[in-house]
Every structure is written in C-alpha cells, then in structure tokens.
Length: 175
Image (cartoon, rainbow, N blue to C red; front, side):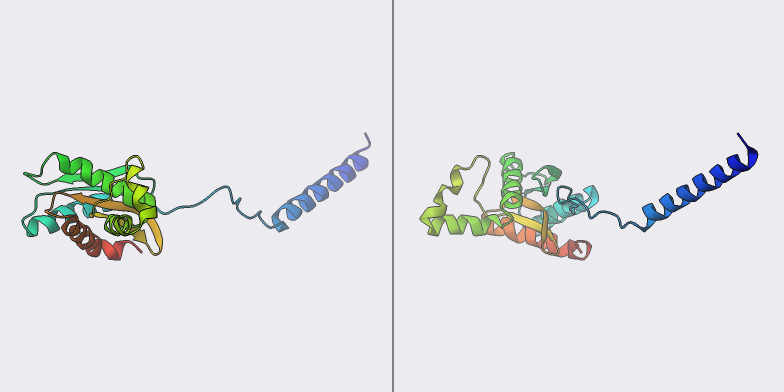
C-alpha cells in the first residue's frame, strides 16, 4: 500500500474515532432504571445503640426488658436483654419490632385500632404479628428504615415509652 495512502487512511480512522468518543461523551447518561432502588438502612452500631438505650430507659424505671431492633425488611440487627428479663421478652420484642417495621406503624396504635375496629380485628391472625404496645418504627425523615421492639415492662404502653426514649436519644443520627 502506498505510504501516503496509508497515512491518509490512518488520519481518517483517527478522526472517526475521535468523533465517536465525542459523541459518546456528549450523550447524556440514561436515567436510572425504576427497577433499581436506593434505600436507606441503619448501621449495626446504630441498631445496637437503640437496643441499649431502650433497655437502659426501662431499667431506669425498674423494668427488666429485652429490646430488638430490625431493619426495614424486619431482619434482626441487634438484641439486648437486661439481667433478670424473662425469656419470653426476647420473642415478644422481636415480634413487636417485626410487626412495626412491616406495618410502618407503632404496635400500640395497631392494637388499639384492632380493638375498636371490627374490620381490623383479623390483624391478630397474620402470622408473626404481635399487637401489643412496644413496637415503634425507626424513621430517617419520613422513610421507615426499621423498628425497635421492647418487651417485659408491666404494660405495652410502658414498653413503648422505653422504645420512644431510645429513639429520642439517637434522633440526631437519623437524618
């Protein structure tokens, strides 16, 4: 092949490549697919802090409880059980947390609604739901990222107070 023809072909090839690169970089990136979602979730450290703060809040009032923190999917992230807390408190705290995360509502409000509203009375038949006070959603802004469940105080309303006290303690970390 003629050397000048070869150089000319190389110049055309390089120019076409450069145009292709410019065209690729000038094209805006496609919008993220609605099938792919970004979700907030809590760290293990935050989950442990919430569980510890709930147990401490109840201990300050003389109640030996268990506290379970679950993530947005209801999967356990942290559990703490006070000295002398009954063994039943572990299961109760986990079910309350799971119920609250699943429904994105405090379990005390769900229990009261089920008692007043015949249409909601069947909520107790959903496998795993525990409609007793003490489960409270953990929110980052308006987004539920998990829940805390407390069991063992002499009343679900007292379990809920301990859960809310724990969330109050970490509210600055929730964004």
